[in-house]
Amino acid sequence: MAGKDELLLGALGYRFQRPEMLADALTHPSTGGGRAAKRRSDYERLEFLGDRVLGLVVAEMLFTRFPDESEGSLARRHAALVRREAVARVALSMGLDRALLLSKGEEEGGGRQNLTMLGDACEAVLGAVFADGGLAPAAAIIHRYWQMIMDEAISPPKDAKTALQEWAQGLGKALPDYKTLEVTGPPHEPVFLVTVTVDGFAAVTGRGSSKRAAEQAAAETMIRTIQG
Image (tube, rainbow, N blue to C red; front, side, top):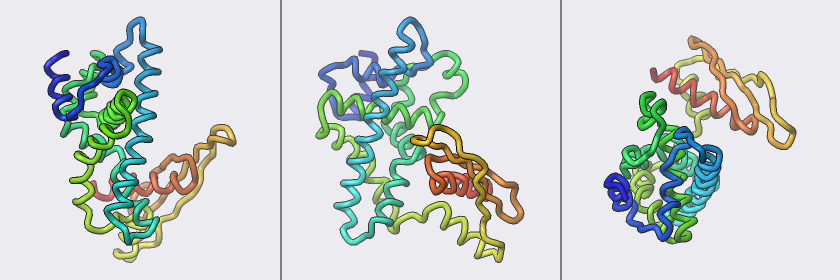
């Protein structure tokens, strides 16, 4: 196994019984070749599995760590811990960026610093650990890397809509104005496109599987715009 993979295994603290599971998680579908379709399927299946494992373990961690908090507070903490930026941060701390196998185009395009790609790969690796060794080793990795991030937030984070509203009110501005632009996709899997407008800033949009999720996504984009 390559040295960069050995370093990642050391960071994970786990030795695979089936090394090909890790290879699938580290091989981005963009690498192409004759196995391109299967590789994409393997990678995306592991990412799907890892996302669910991460969500479950983080939920259990929060349930235990904050016994007096409401469901809403726990949900906001959970969303912050499993969001793209947090997962990508863990990926970098593991050295996952150095272990990824990317196509030349992704490499030249800065794929190793792409937060979405890093987050997806981290979830794929967690899925590979779970598929290879079960919940215990996957949970141990998640506890090790997410505990520090969890401990950084003393109070539950505010959801993006609340934070944006409080910012606007603090400056005496009108409340953010949300409008649903369109709903696409089949009835069982809709995609909402929502716009939010704040006085002094151009409107931005957000997408989500529900109107609320799309509004939250739009609010997050507006907050990033405001913060520059």
